[in-house]
Length: 135
Image 1 (cartoon, helix red, strand yellow):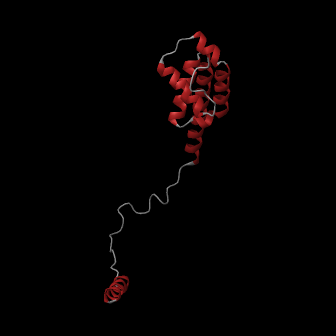
Image 2 (image 1 turned 30 degrees about the vertical axis):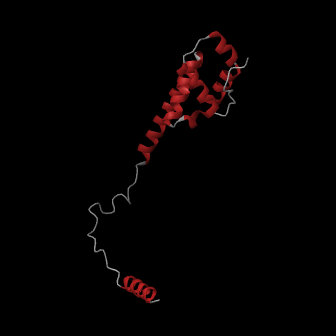
Image 3 (image 1 turned 90 degrees about the vertical axis):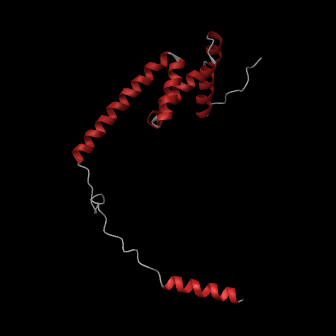
């Protein structure tokens, strides 16, 4: 019982005698809190982003000619974290690849890296890829 009472007394003393940090003022001041980005500069960056998105969309369309290049490009966009800008194009490309998959695998002898990349990218985008080759 005495231990519990001592603990409660110590806790009350600690709460009542809390020391102040007395930290010096920040060297940085409030300059970051009042930061404003010029609107014209923001619009310039927005235009550049839109131009780059169009360039990437063109690259995605050009990569459609070779399914392996297309899968690698889609994988690259996903790993860079910008694939959400091109969701519909990626979905259309992957649907075409998935629909033509049996013919694609018959015509070409892909290496293990290419097959595993194809498998992973299609699975990540919700396509039901079988684990084995149907007999």
